[in-house]
Length: 209
Image 1: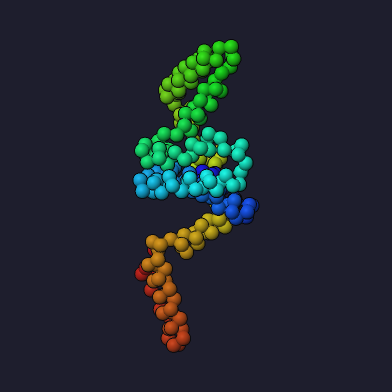
Image 2: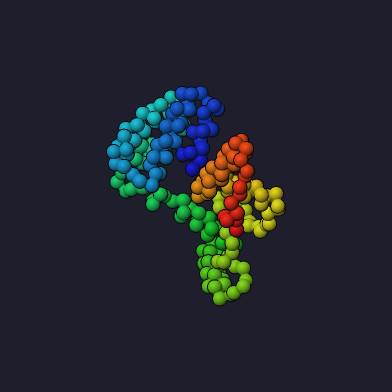
């Protein structure tokens, strides 16, 4: 995510334009091969463009930068063309789970035993927690990621001012009440015309609820 989306924005004014263009091409390359849908024709174009991009990269970075990992970038588009989208095959979930298993180790003399014991304890606690009602467990705990915001959830009440602000926002921005808004504007125009003409103002109270 950082390399594919944020890095091109950060590099716009921080480096020389020639350096920025090459690094942005690398970011676009990874963004393309990590997309949810793979187009074969697009991958074939990437196979040719990445070679030129790496050649331009050699003009900027020293030779020690170009290890075997940099060379493997050339084959990522070909691999995606054959095997499909990258996110079905990358190692990020496995690496995160290996980090979880690494935290299970309490005795470095017997790491496998620590992992097995902690894993069995977690599975047992998860199984038992399903039979505990009205008790907060990790299986029924409220998620910390709610509506795009991180953090624990809290309950609050709106003040009278905040309630009025929310009400006005809905009135001014909700499309479903556009019909009623237009009717109200027409009613105001009719009243203004009656007042201008000097006629008595008659208010229809049949619509009041």
